[in-house]
Image (cartoon, rainbow, N blue to C red; front, side, top):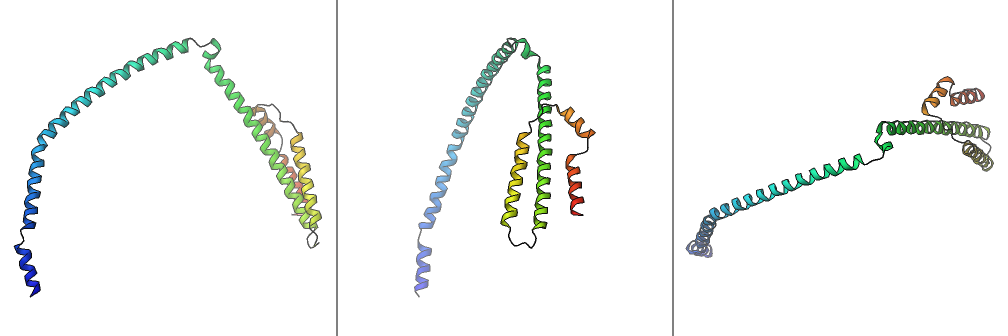
Amino acid sequence: MPITDDIKKTLSDPTPLYALAGAGDLAYEKLREVPGKVEEIAADRKAAQEKAAARLQEAQTLLVEAQGKVTEAVSALPAELKDLKELQEKAQTFALQQVGRAVELAVKAKEAYDELAVRGKAVVEKNRGAGDTAEPAAEVAAEAQVTEVALDAEPAQDTPAEETAQDSADEPAPTAKKAARARKSTGK
């Protein structure tokens, strides 16, 4: 019977109904405030629009002033800076020269790499099964230093990229020659 007593007590307790009535009253009170809030928001919106329009006008004025200052500054530039076409041509020529130098250095690096690979292969084949690898490793290191010194000793030429491209088109690549010689010497 304790369960029935609990059910009777729960059904006779008016607290849940009071809570529901309180929630309804609170909702009614908040809904009565809505028209005032809507008017307040509308007034704030108008003020924000007016403020934004004033800032836009101010920004346009500043833009016109800045354009005038830029025009004034450009007209005050020296005559040699006004010739942008000449500057552009100089920049392109310089860039092409640097590309030519980069290509030249890449070719030299590839040649050095190929030479080292051929020498390394020869050392490995020569000493295969020889047991002592300390001496060939020292030889390879010495040869690598010689190749590195040879690369550092050759100065870069100041030729435009067109001449470098012309030279490379006229002559077969030295890398291909060296690779062919290496293949002949190893029998492959």
